[in-house]
Amino acid sequence: MMDPHPRMMRAVVIPRYGEADVLEIRELPVPRVQDREVLVKVAAAGLNRADILQRRGRYPAPPGSPAEVPGLELAGEVVTAAPDAARFLPGDRVFGITGGGAQAGFVAVDERQLARIPKRLGWAEAAAVPEAYITAHDALVTQADFREGDRVLINAAGSGVGVAAIQIIRALGGMSFGSSRTARKVERCLSIGMDAGIVLSGDPSPLVDAVSKWTAGAGVDIVLDLVGGPYVGVGVTCLARRGRLICIGTIAGREATIPLGQLLAKRLRVFGTVLRSRSTEEKAGVVSAFEADLLPLLQGGALRPIVDAALPVERVVDAHRLLESDSTFGKVILTFD
Ligand SMILES: NC(=O)c1ccc[n+]([C@@H]2O[C@H](COP(=O)([O-])OP(=O)(O)OC[C@H]3O[C@@H](n4cnc5c(N)ncnc54)[C@H](OP(=O)(O)O)[C@@H]3O)[C@@H](O)[C@H]2O)c1
Image 1 (tube, rainbow, N blue to C red):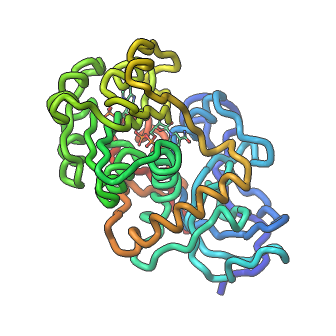
Image 2 (image 1 turned 180 degrees about the vertical axis):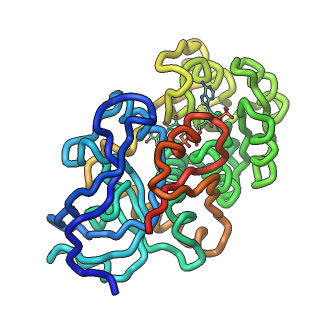
């Protein structure tokens, strides 16, 4: 039986900034629950680019999150809850998002940032859901006003967020097109429902002709830009009249040149998003939209989380190196006993 009052836990720690080998596994005290928090025994936790940036000293934890223990998403079992937390009972299987601290044996999370895991998902699959599917759903549906029939271009289509977006777009009746620098990833994206794709060498300009061909000259309604840099200006060129481009990541560069004539003439919207630094109330909002729109699709199997690799937490250094290699398709997950 699970100890109801565990005192110590293993956690991934960033003791100083640097390459993957700075990471350590340490014994730390189990966090205490505060207002509306639930203590979750973590079974699996997703790895994200944000963890790599945090390890390099370029993405500090937001206020209220542990500075040294990374981890933005988790799947696990409820152990205990604060007196004013009422959504879950001990033993419930939950997954969700947090500002940090999830790559540990236990994490305390506001109950509104958690949802119940559909029965069909194992721990690693469940941990592959929160960041990728919530980010993609919030960007597409809540912020970019996705409608049935919309055509969406996804740059870095084989990423964790990219493959989630492909599945969501298909389930909601849209069309997806995507780019990757890896031919194998484009093939795999096509096999999970992407309508067409292109392999790029690093220069995104061939996207303009490809999108024109795929959409018979109309352009796409939405660009889900996961990479930034030169992809943003090219994405604007790929948009149809009244199209929306949402910047989600800057892995290819933090600056962009945008053809403003097109922005005006096509009446476009270009905007950005981030999940981690949002308030608890805002995170509660995205989680409840996710529960309403996506949980039934996960339950029914229309959305199938893709795990590239699930490694025991002792191999966190390998996990970081794997994600940094750009060779993964879907998510990298850390598992706990
Ligand atoms: N705003 C938010 O709240 C939020 C939340 C989650 C993720 N993100 C961001 O969204 C992006 C995707 O995240 P993820 O976890 O899904 O990523 P991921 O699984 O790590 O995949 C990222 C992929 O991007 C491609 N890539 C890497 N460097 C590139 C470059 N210089 N130019 C073009 N493509 C490049 C690589 O694929 P190929 O080499 O095959 O092209 C790589 O596999 C990241 O930028 C991440 O930081 C933002």
